[in-house]
Image 1 (cartoon, rainbow, N blue to C red):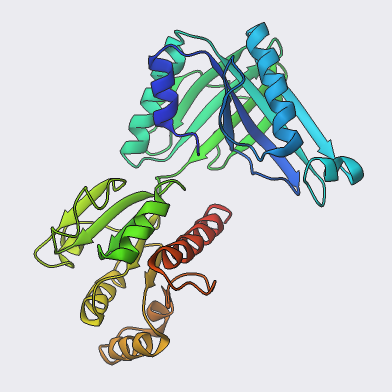
Image 2 (cartoon, one colour):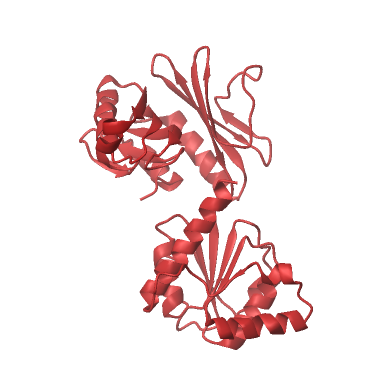
Length: 340
């Protein structure tokens, strides 16, 4: 599972003691990228993963030492040749892991996390900042790039500046790791049938906020979509476009019960700024819909935005397989967006 703000705030609320192992820099072939987190507890149990294998085993070992010594640590791992093979890294690579010690009753840490959580829920862009001192003490803060608000510890302005990207840098007294957070990605699933149900099931564990849209309450309900963040049952499935602004971090998945509804949703979706638009259906059906849009005056560059047939070509047949193929494409598209 990914380590979410909810997990961190709940652990802080119950006064749990743990460390956060974060990949703060990576180069070459590595199992996970910068920003990936894993929690390690005093009994050796973990939550999340930074890639498994010997790398993770070594980080867990160092995390337990940090828990015993009650201070953080910074470790760099370089792998080439046999070392790379033993660490499951085919081409080798370099990873820097910051181990942050979080004591029980960490009031300051919890307050910072609660504030960052509020920024996330509001869809604001911000930097989460961790300062690592040479003695292993860690400092926490944040800068809201949307509102300009600053919380907690912020590095001296003359030696550090907030950049709209994730950075890790060394200063005279230690290190600063700043994580750039954009609004979370939301997938709007138009159609609460079997395929829509499978997409929702797989979308939530990989970090998407899930919104289900349909005009049938007997299909779009919490019993069938317990993982959905929001379920919209509307007189017309396209009514959602009247009172919502879709942005680049919003993904539209069109899997309704019929061609007419697919067309109606797609026509509205193409008039939004949604980052991703995908539609289920055969190539023939999709081409007929595209031709109708052209006749209505939709420019070709807008039509070319549509991923149709939706999903990666993995030979999917069942609703579950189709759901996995759709999620694979969404994950691929999201990764490309993040790496721009």
